[in-house]
Length: 231
Image 1: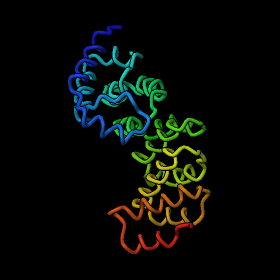
Image 2: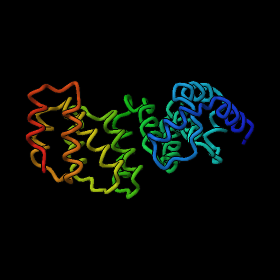
Image 3: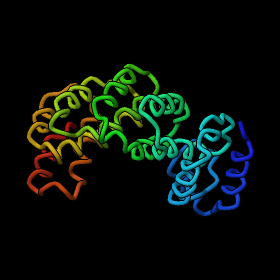
C-alpha cells in the first residue's frame, strides 16, 4: 500500500484547518476530540478527487488519526464507481469507524447508489438491526430515513421503528427524526402508528416535537401533535 497519499492528504487537511470552525464543530460532536476543523464541502472535494484514482490505498489505510480522515474515507465509498459487492464490502469495513452522528449521517447521505439498488441495500442493512452498538443502529435508521420512506417500504419501516429498543441518545434521536419525516410523506399511516406503538416516552415525545418543528406540517397537524404528548 502506498502510504504517501495518506500522509499527503493529512498534511493538506492540517493546512486547511480552521480553529474557529474546529471549536464550533467540537461543540456539535461532544466527545470527539480529534477534529482539525475542515469544512464538509472541502472534504467532499478531496474525497471526489481521491475517488477518481487513489481510493484503494486510502480505503485500505487503517491509520486514521483525525475525524476528517474518517469522514473522507466514508465519503469516498459513496463516490467510487465499483460493483455492489465491492462497495458493500467497503461499507461493512467502514461501519466500525462510525463513532459520532456527523460521520454517520454524512456517510449515509453519500450512499446514493442505494436509489438504484433498494432491495440489495435493504437486505444488507437488516442484520445491523440486531446490533447493540449505538452507531451501527443509527446507521441503519439514517439509511432508512434517507432512502426507504417509500410506498413499498413504509409498513416495514414503521414496524422496524416500533421494535428498536436501545438506550443510546443518538439512536433515539434518529428514530424520532425518521418518524417525523415518515409523517410528512405518509401522514395517515404514521399517525396511526403514533397512536399505537411501543416507543419509549422520550422517543415518542421527541417524534412529536420534530413533527411540530417541521415547516412542512400544517398548523392543525401541529396542534394535534401537541395534544398527543405524554406528560
